[in-house]
Length: 534
Image (cartoon, rainbow, N blue to C red; front, side):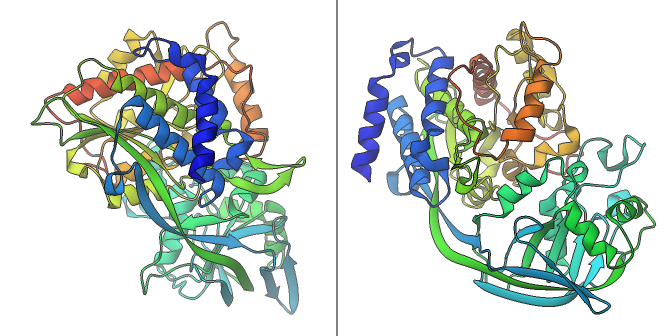
């Protein structure tokens, strides 16, 4: 394996004229070539626990070494081992519902998908179904969809997202809070002892189509291993809207009716009078994945035990269900772009003639697509303690569509770094735009969130929404096409005509921000009142 990797990388570098450029300038062409290789069919979609994923991490480690960054992983290597459990749902899985003597069976992938979180090959349940609205218990908003109803041993049926309101302060208005994320729904159902939780999908509440759900939940996912006695759902599942309507029709209700009912603070859980049966079959195996970690020590002996972190996830969906004959989910945008930026940042930082005072850690994490598993593991096993981590700056899915006029910095307003970020953006002739889709809850969907939960000020340096020389609707049209046709699909592939200038620009922004923070006397923090405060 190592000889194959070395040969491929050597051949790639031999044909790479961009390396002859000035070592101190951040280069769109170097970023392009990293993206091209990381999203090539040769890496087979960079699946966790696969040959392609191992090749990707070898490539990233090699690039860190070539840049001059030192290994920061286990036993003097560039790798931090991340033990995971892979759960691969099998088509032999069965799900049905019975009411008033009638039984409705659901079709795997076309009607439902889901994962057995007990991490066992087989799990069966036959339980009463209870509709719990959006499945939210948020005392600070005086909202409780459970209202004391005991759902232990039952199947909860619910919607993702949050109740809507014209009040801009209610659940943070248009911006999704963590209560709206599917991950919270399953966590809360688990805490309350449910045997299964099934989300009825709608494009409006999820923010993406069924093809995204099917592609993400109908395949192998990975989990941090359960400890003995940990509770877990036998099925963390999704139903299509059409299947949801069929299920609810057994009770004389519809998806639209229950969506409307779930919008009221007075909503109470509704026993559906349905029993849902599941025979959940999975292939389960222990796998050892890895984060790739490299460090460049700081120049100040008093501060070099503190660090700025740059992160990006290296994984994508691997080889999966074919779409138009293509089974490789290359992930050229998501997230070969972020890894390409990470590698170029490491090269540029290592080339600085005078290093900043604090150290810098470059971290390519595993299993983001399965629920931020690699960054979650890192924060539980940090290379720099959270109290000595100045900030975590993340890159995830940056669009290579031209020269940017703006940048989204998802979450910077939560921290004391905002004035500095505004100053650097002005210096680079960039405006800072608000999240164009706050209702999608992007802050809770990428690896910076794991760092935030550990108390580390963290946010993503995100994509542009305005491009030089392009019409006002240029971004919106391209984004809509990407979201509808390519997100988490095999068609997220590298295109030779992509313009990587915007990636160079966000790399420059992140480097200037990181250098300034690495040189400050005082560590950044969250703004007062933040739920993540140190």
